[in-house]
Image (tube, rainbow, N blue to C red):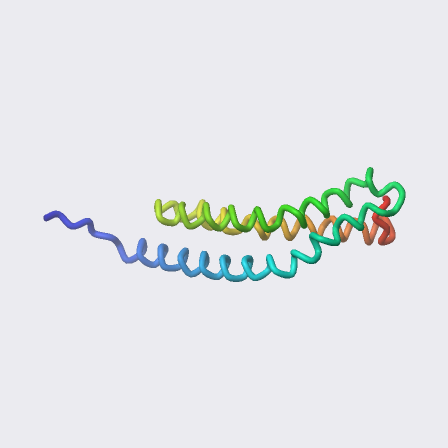
Length: 121
């Protein structure tokens, strides 16, 4: 029998990636729950006149609505990539919900700074 020798560095890399994926799965999965009421109320952002044409408002609503989908798909793809031993892409895929959160915060910041907190900018 020929046994494949796995280096200590590869074992450590796999272990660190597994821990990162577990933490991301738990944290981003839990964050889906508070996003659900925000998603239900996101239609109210378009009540003020002119908010239908406001790009930051549309980006904010899109980031809220897409967050659960991005999280589930990103984490699922990350675990598939982990099994296939492509650790870097697994980490990137697991971090996609963080990008979604950053885009939502940036859109909210833009609305607060440049639109005086109004959804119609």
